[in-house]
Length: 114
Length: 114
Image (cartoon, rainbow over all chains, first blue to last red):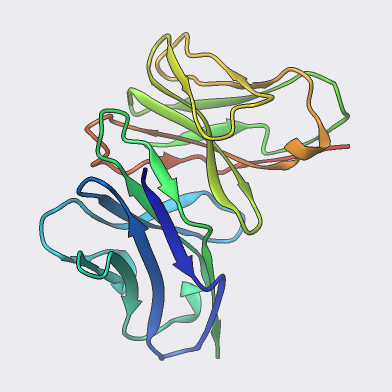
């Protein structure tokens, strides 16, 4: 069965600093991995996804994530945080089966200090 | 505009009073799903539907019902709501291409059961 662990329920960075949000997955089959962002009082929006092509995936708003099979990780990074990046971020894994159901991590709330 | 809509956005009700949360999508997606979001628990899947008249349980289906009579609509029914169903609910839709595609989320319905 697939699962996702997000390390750190809250992360705080200063504006302009590196953003690193950690995600480790467990999957018995080659996984499809996703990062979603949730801004306050809104639904989830896809940031990026890994579907077995390039291991370094670039997403929207300057975010990227690297799939590392040896570490079973899919950490999300952004070189320079902006105030508008403050949101909650969810890592998710799909088993890639016909259902395509997503298993979500518990989320990491990112705060950006001026 | 491609979107998933949910109604109502906010609902306060009392224990035992049946309610329905509607979900509609205009993207002709086959796959639709309901999640609940609780602090510290992330998103957990309640029910999903692969197509019209095809529904299945997710991780936390107890106390909920769904139906899929039309492709665009996927209502969530609480026959006898209880306080532990107080939560933020999201509907999502996608094309069922083996988990490769992103899910599009509605804006959420915040339900309080007293």
